[in-house]
Amino acid sequence: METPEFHPVAERDQVRPGVPLRIEVAGRRLLLIRTQEDSFHAVDEFCSHEEATLANGAVRDGCIACPMHGSRFDLTTGRPLEEPATEPLGVYPVRLEGDRILVCPEPIHD
Ligand code: FES
Image (cartoon, rainbow, N blue to C red):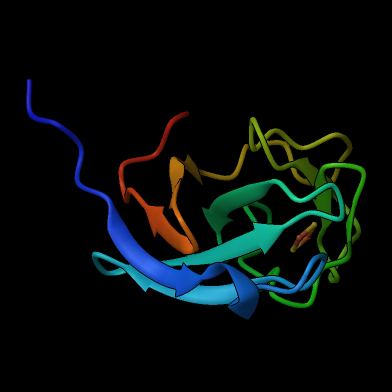
């Protein structure tokens, strides 16, 4: 089995807590999110409901809320916590090397 490839996407201080950063990794449009608790997550940029961008979504309690219809998604599993979204977001492995943040474009939960 091949080792998944991690791509450098940002420096730690480029990512403000609670403010999603748009990134593109191997052709996928993702959001890099630093929570207020200082954990890093990478998820699909677009909501699984109607493809709205989540880039302006509120980040709170380990979740991101879709600005369009309000579904919240768990940043660790990608699962929606309430309707109207019923499908999970793709979530992607994140690695920190010093101050460098790397993301693998292979989703953890598909
Ligand atoms: S587009 Fe995100 S909940 Fe509808």
